[in-house]
Image 1 (cartoon, rainbow, N blue to C red):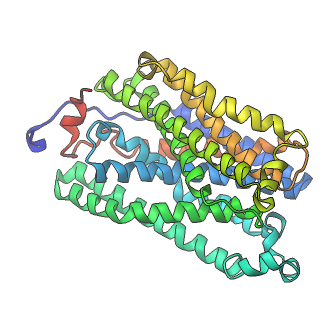
Image 2: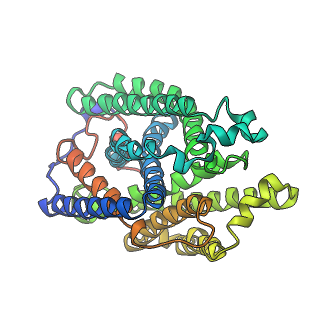
Image 3: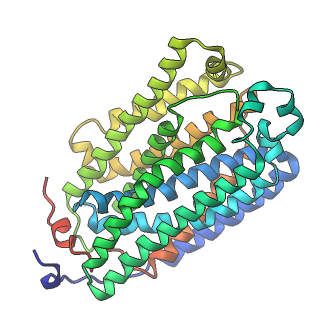
Length: 395
C-alpha cells in the first residue's frame, strides 16, 4: 500500500478557547497555592513539588518512549494517534521549571546531601562517590539533555514528513529509536533512583527502576487513552478511529496494570522473604503511623479496580469505560508516588491543602502545552507511510 497514492479528507481544526482558559485558571490557582504553601511549610511543599515533578516526568518521557516504541516495533495501529504522545512529550523541556525549586532545598530532601552526616555514616560514605550534589546535578543535566534532544529529533522528522511525504524520515526515526530505547532504560532508572530511591539512601532495591517504569507506562497510556477517546468523540479524528484502536489501548492498560502489580509484589516478596534490616525498614515505615491505610488503598486503587474495570473484552472497547479508567489510573499513579515519597520524612500520615497546589499547576500546564502543540501541528501524521494500514487496522 503506497502512502504516496493514499489521501483522505483531513480537516485540521483548533481546540476550543475555553480549554486554554481552563489551563490558565488551573495554572494560576495552582501557582497561588504553591506560593502560600512554601511560605507556610517549605519542606513539605518541596516533597509535593517532587511528586508532581516525577509525575509529569512519567507523562513526558513515557510519551517519548511510546513514540520510539512504535517506530522500532513497526506498529501500525498506533500511527493515527501517535501525535497525542508527541504532544504530551512536549512537557519535557518544561520539567526544568519544577526541578529548579528542588535544587534550592536538596538538603531538606536528601539525607545524603549533608557532608557532616555522611562523614559519620559508613554506608553513606561508601555511596558518596555517586550520592553527592555535584554528580547529582551532572546526572540531571545529562539525562534531560538526552530526553530533550531525542524529543526534538523525533518530532522534527515526524512533522517534516507531513509536508514532504519523505518516507526516509521514518527510517531515520527507526534508527533514532534504536539508539534511544537503551538510553531510555538507563536514564529513567537513574532518574528514579536519584529523585525517589535516594530519599532513603540506606535502602536499596534492585527492581526499583522497573517499578517506576511500570507506573510510568500506566500513566502515559492512561493520559493518551483518555485524550484520544475524548478527541475522537469530539470529531477531531474525522471519525477515522475504530473500536479495534480502542481495544488495543484498553488491552495495553490492562496489561500494564498486571505488570505493575507483578513488579510491586515481587519487590515486596523479596524484601519480606530475605528479611534484611536494610530493606525491611522501608516497608515497615509504610505500615505505621497511618501509612498502612495508604498501602492497602494502593493495592485496591492501583490494581484491583482497574483490573476488574478492564478485564472483559467489551470494557476495553467501551469509550466511557476507557475514559473513567484512564482518569482513575492517573490518580493511582499519583497516589503511588505519594506513597513512595511522603513517608520518607513524615512518620505519620500527612495530607492537606499543601499537597494540592503542585498537581493543580501540573494539570494546568499539561493542558496549555497540549493545546499549544495541537493548534500548530496536524493531529494525524498525514505523511507517515504506515498511516493507511493504521487506519485500516483490524484485530
